[in-house]
Image 1 (cartoon, rainbow, N blue to C red):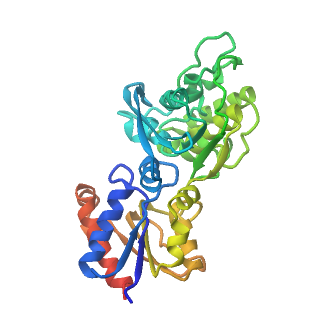
Image 2 (image 1 turned 30 degrees about the vertical axis):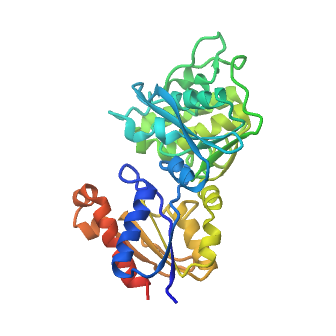
Image 3 (image 1 turned 180 degrees about the vertical axis):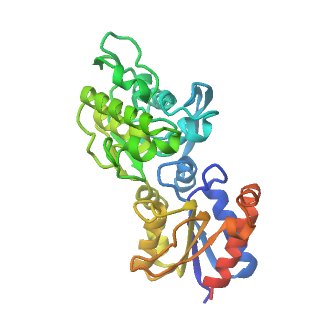
Length: 367
């Protein structure tokens, strides 16, 4: 009997959506082993590609246009959300407030205002449950921008300042015009368990990735602490630090619950059931590093494959840490940069090198 192959990658951020990654890997595998049974289940963890993965997984999902909204640097960007059966709205922060949308990094001034505008559009369209994918944020504003778009104001009724760098200037908050959360609740999909503040918090861990200097990182952390003192409890909740503290903003203001995004997508797409009968699992992401096995999609897949005694292969644009099983055994892996010979070559033709990686996986894992 031919082996059963499950291909379940994340997106390669800024390059290809998870659906495109899965197709390219499958094409490569079939070029070597055309008779194998293949199941493609593109995944996401709450960041970039979450809308695409959920749309592919849920029958009856409808993509809705929210029109132009405010991008992270103030320029207009397209806004969209996904309507699922049962009046469930899914919003992906990276889609309208993501780091790649910045012309120039602005760690103090970048905003999540557009996220709030898309959420408002979904609620006005009748959404009764809200799912927010967190990840890939350009800002460290604690979700203040999004909450401002939803009606949160200064104590004098004026608009909140833009960006995390101005949070320390707030003298109070007025919630009287803040929209109430949908009756079915708010769920946050996250791939990190960082709290809001401190050495593991939103500013310290993720601020430098958004261009923050050490002095700016301290300013942001102090501003987030001040904001939390005004908005309320939730700063210590695991995941509160996700997306520049946006997790915290919705925990404190709307009582949102944080769950692992990879687990949510896996359950929604039927991934555990598919892996239970698979011989080989092929997954991947744009960059595999030391954090990939801790709460992110690849780590989840490694655990599921081991539980069901399936082989697993990992493909990434770049690999900076050896992928290993839970007992430390090295796993088969391939980096597009190595196959292409350089970062520039891999970026120029990612689908080509993904097909090469899929073929290499078939030769290594298919027997």
